[in-house]
Length: 237
Image (tube, rainbow, N blue to C red):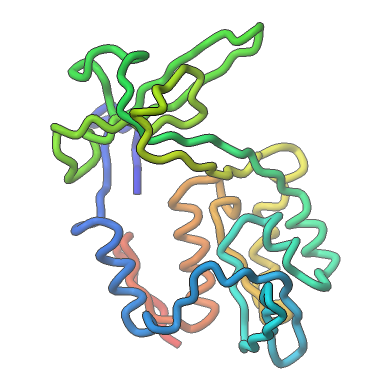
């Protein structure tokens, strides 16, 4: 998790989890590792007073006590068979921006490596439209070798040699406007209604920390003990 990008102590400071992300993901999931299902192809969520049914792509139905939507607001709304008026209003206000992200080793559009920082911004005038790409030098990340040459480019506005691309994907980020912003303080009121809960970066200001804190809030509502990295005590059920 990144904090204090403009810290009074330095121009860039980082709070990094010990032993990296995978270690605590593995620890958190250890108790139910054999029950995790990937690429389930959920098509619809049907809620009843005493249960929630997930309808899969092949028509299979799986029944649970509660459901947590750890995804974007529009994705959650699309899955609900019968959303409430509040869900239509609060979740429906959100739109998301598709961001192209490329992990590559093409340094041709950048200064020499010794001059690059953790975040490098390239500004270009594209036919009268001002475009910015955000590029991360992966060797600046905690625990990564300085010999690493990988660059993570979001919204790349420059040519990238296909032979030097390691990964390409689409990231979706929430759009904060006059319709979505006013819903932020109201979104937590949806939690618990019809055994349904929501978490994500849009329940805040689009940051990683907002996704984590909203998930912690859901955990509290479900009576789950959890470790709080901020140092405050967990909540017991």
